[in-house]
Image (tube, rainbow, N blue to C red; front, side):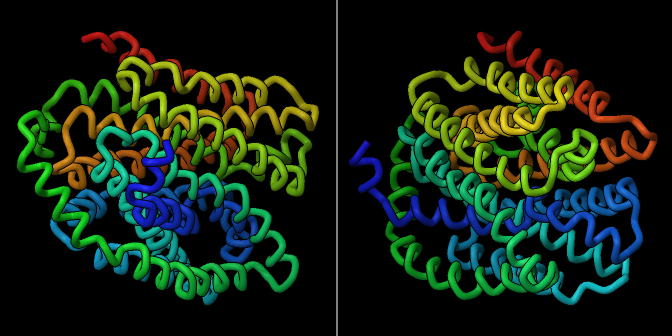
Length: 398
């Protein structure tokens, strides 16, 4: 384990920090401002969900093309482009006015550059340059995403109470500009050497599998494992996007919700550091049918119980699946299809994930608008989990 951390420590830290700062484009952060944004533009839950989903869908479509550029472009240039885009989106939110088109462009930019391109960069980099320790590398990189979920809501709520919600977005953009940019220059300064070593190993290997994206699209396994790969972002995006409705319906408060993210983070870390080493030792295809079950039990707690203690059980169990999801799905596609064209293949999968996360705010928003409650939302998610887990379980030995 020590040799793993010491082999390429700068690359591991790059994976960590790009996942951390990408979280400014994740739903859990944007949803903190749900009420303020809807109040400014006079939108219902369903209306904002539709706009959010359209922006996210647009980002998914463009990511299919843009994501494959990481296979041919210098990682440092690619990282600079996507992080600069996120900076502009965050600062743009500071200047948001009552204009639907402006909101659409800004939400699109947050989702495309943050959730889309920056997250794609982190996972692809960890998957590509680590072979035998791929699971552990993805876990270390993804720890940034988990730490952001533990800290961003608390920091954001503090800034909102101190100076205002638009100022919180200005703070986010400046933090990326001042801290992340110089970090990247340092952490990736040896990237040319590392990439040459990677290309040499790839060219010399006689056992590497290197599918093209066209091959993947017609492969049965892609469709067997796609639903279980995109179920967590679909479900979590919907639940987090409408978390204000859920906690109000259950009688839980915003302070309690912010505190529960600490539990989410702790149990996500547990999931990360169980899942990463586990998939370095076992076939991911055999383990993946079971990783959604903690989320299943967490949603059942949310559906059936009202006491405030259950928000912590709910968030903790969601956190375990979130932690397992990152190394499991990050490793799965590299195992199935190789690493030579991993950027293009992961861009396709990531676009499907973003597409799924775009649909859930609309679907759950319509459930809310038609006066259904948290039980119906939970039941919908439970059915989806069982459906997604069925096909990998049936085909895991084939």
